[in-house]
Image (cartoon, rainbow, N blue to C red):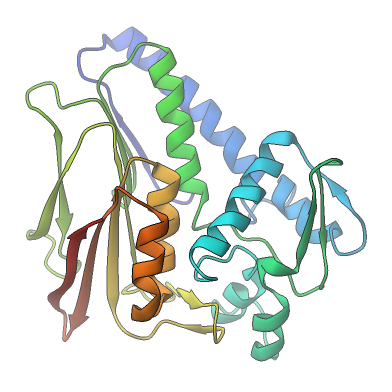
Amino acid sequence: MGTRFNLLLPGVDELEGDRLFVACLKELNRIENMLSCFIDDSLISQINRHAFDNDFKVTSELFEILEVCLKCFELTQGAFDIGLGNLIDHWNGKQNNEDIDVLTREGSIKNIILDKAQKTIRFKSPNVKLNLGGYGKGYALERIQNLLTVRNISSAFISFGESSICCIGKHPYGDYWSIGIQDFYQKEKSIATLKLVDQSVSTSANMEVNNHVINPRNGKPVVEKVMITVKSNSATEAEVLSTALMVADESQWENIQNAFLGIEILKVKYKNKKAEILKNENH
């Protein structure tokens, strides 16, 4: 998934821990080979190559994922859009001389057709390219969470590069898992601390070079240096919202928050590498 995977299993002996870790890696590889647009023969890459010319049949699991992503597009008022892969490629220098307006207008997930009866997907435009970068890690965390839970693991800490985290149960020596949100430019400092019990956290930011977060409304990267952290009972929900709220207008925030109850949002703006907390609220 383009980042390191960490798994902490308190109270589990080494042999069982090794078995569980191998099982988790196997599941992660399966998900990556389904959802990554950077793997040439993944299911998503096959869709991207063929779905404009033909109805492309997918597995029931992937079809459900696509339905969820389409629903998230609607609930976030278009702020979360997995159809803009060509725009992302453009701003990352992988495509040149593209018409941004055309890619923005025609590349949206709203230009896909899902046939539930046949489990097929079809693109209305050749400019659609699926990129599930704002969804895949959250989905993977939920799958790992389920894998461990059915194996009677009651306490665990699961992390993708510290930006996407899922916790099972409580910390073995406390009432919750304590998660510090790191200041991007002053790594030794924490901006806030979140308490997690069977919950997840996802953070999105655009401070890194070439870390382009694309605004689906105008097809351009977000310029303002912002970090969004979302705490939720659902890892996929946290992942989706941390991406969507990076680009959502202030006028959209309330409606988006109303659509996803039980979340906690931290919004931090950076100016001259100094952090300013704009929002820190529960909903």
